[in-house]
Length: 386
Image (tube, rainbow, N blue to C red; front, side, top):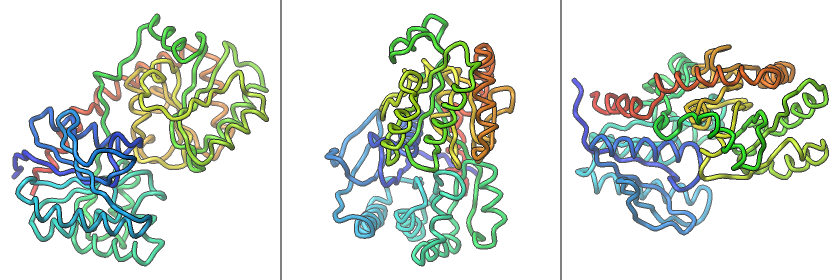
């Protein structure tokens, strides 16, 4: 029998306005639950001079000061999460933990002592998720053993990850559940033709065919390889009308990307825009969204781009494989197969109308299955189940 849940505690190492896919999704879900009449509180670490307490769009946020770095910081945050959850047990009915990192141990233990339901959402795709990384250390393996004995509900964002957890002997005891990220389909909407042209001009572009990639500039996102393949496509000719690539994000490979753009003489066709808090202007300017990552849970940016009517080309991995209908809302490719990636780029470049048609399908897919309102209803059902 489902219970009607009225209060939720979100537990996250970092939270909005800290930039990141997990942080953004946690905030968007929190806001959606507030709109449905729930009381939503968040506990997180205090970083970057943010206030210790504030309320943002109805979401009450409390940030804990920690000290030290690495393991010390993690232990201090774990202790504070544990005692907060014990002391405030009357103020929440369910705890929703974002990422199965060390703070999740404190939350699960507190849940066992208080009888509260604990839900843990995994981030990133298989191979870089918290459970896989935990297998590499003694402390991590102890954490996994504790989870297996405690049996928290684990939300996973792809069918591949779900099957892996359900069929792996080392994860017996966990309760995996297939879930999805959501997007505000009222905010992220397709522009009209003249609005699209204006959006391109607003980010410094003419009415070119715009390819957009968004993400941290780290090796697994394969942005450097994308730039190198982009140069090969341009060198091969046959890319009329003119095409442009915008990469939004920052990270350790930023200098490598800048050097690659310079050495490959791509200054006229590749824009490294840096990190952006608001991606909507870029989605509205884009015709094709590229997700070249080796692994992804379920990309927020991809869903937001789809909601804006942008066609997709994405690696055939994890959540992207679940969302994209091959040849309808986008193209999928092997992220390690340069030929497949270049073929996708060429097909979109040769036929601008193709991106328009696929973008319409992409928008319909998100509205039907990934709207934040629907996702919020689904999580409420999960919260309410004994």
